[in-house]
Image (cartoon, rainbow, N blue to C red; front, side, top):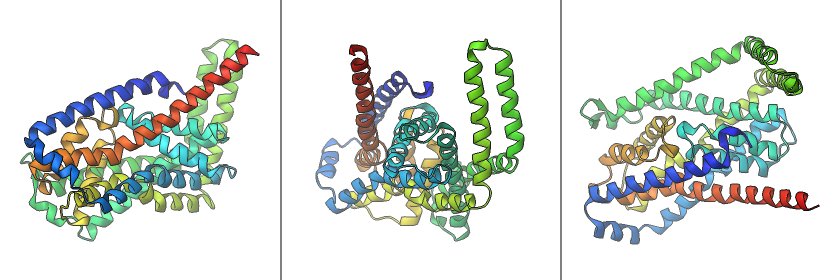
Length: 355
C-alpha cells in the first residue's frame, strides 16, 4: 500500500469529508430557512430522473475504468477490464478522501498492481489518464466558447466582480496552461529520463548498500517508464491516447451532468449547455481544493454558482442530491471495496502466522 494512501490517512480523510460536508449542509439548511419545503421537495422528486441519477453515478467506475483499460492495455495488453473498472472507481474514491485529490493517482496505481499490471506500466497508465483529462478539457472548453455556448451566463455575476462566463473562461485557462506544460514534458521524454536517472544516482550515493537493490529496481523503473512514454507518443500510442480523450466524457459524465439531472429531479427547467458549463467551472475550481473532496467548498461554491437556477428554499435539497451523486455514493461503495481488501489481507496474514 503506497504511503500516500495509507489506511490511516484514508480513514482520517473520510472523517474530515463527512464532518465538513455535514457542517456545510446544516449551514445550507439554515440558509434555505424552510425545512418543511426541504422535506416536501425530497419526497416529491421526479423518480425517472432519480433513476437516471443513480445510473450516472456509476460512470465514476464504468466510464473511468473503461478509459483506464484502453490506456493501460496499450502498455500491458493483459490488463483485466474488471481490474481497470475497480482502479478507475477507487481513483475517484481516494481523490474524494484526500486534499487536492492527491490520493487518486497512487490508489489507481495500487489497484492496477493488484490486478497484475506491473508498477511502471501502472504508473504510466495513471499518468496518461490525467493527460487525457487535460487534453479533453483543453479542447472541449474552447470549442464550447467558439460555438457560443454559455453566452447567457454573461448576464449573471458572482461577488459583483466577474460574470459566470468570465469564471468559466478563467478556470479553462488554468487547464490549458497545465496542458502546455505537459506537452513540453512529453515532447522531450529523454531529458526527463536523464534527470530522473540523476536523482536515482544521488539517492544511491547518499544511502547504505542495503538499499542498492531497491535503487537498482528504481533505475529499471525509470528506464521502463521512459520506454512506456516513448511508446505512447509514437506509432499507435497516439491512437490509444486519442481513445482515452474520446472516453473522457464518460469518465467525467457524473461530475458534468449531475447538476442538470438534479435540477430535473426537482422539476426545475434549465438550459442544458449552460448548466454543463457551470458544472465544468465547479469541476475545475474543485480540482485542487485543499479539503477532502472539496468538502465545505463544494457546497458553498455550487450553491453560489447554481443560484441562478435554484431558489434559495430549494438550495439544501439541490446540494444534498448533487453531493449524493457526485460524491457520497462513490465514497460509500469505494469504502466497502477498500475495507474488504484490508480485511482479506488481515485474514491472509493471520493464516500465514498460524501455519
